[in-house]
Length: 139
Image (cartoon, rainbow, N blue to C red; front, side, top):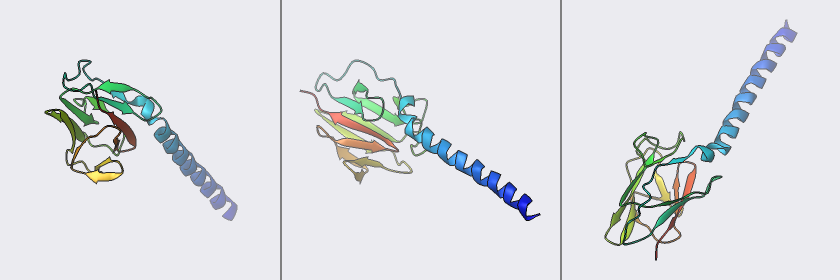
């Protein structure tokens, strides 16, 4: 009887171990599922870009308004459970860009500091969920 119980617990343990490993593998490769639908025409005032720092290094010129999230309507769609549907937006005001958190559940970081609104400077690192982006200011 004890052998049967140990046998069952062994398979339950292996099942949960498999699920754990599967979740880790999913998180490692999630950056390859990021899709970008940003208009190619950037603002004439600044040729600023947003560069993904994950497994897929992709640059996108910034329009006047860019929404980041899991929503189908987001300009940058992130398949990440720690990203809200409408997580953050980047807006151009005059000759500057600002990042605004859209009351996301897990927050938005700029240079490892949680922000509600932040003026973006060249080289700033933006973290949303498990995704990181670098803001590159134009000339």
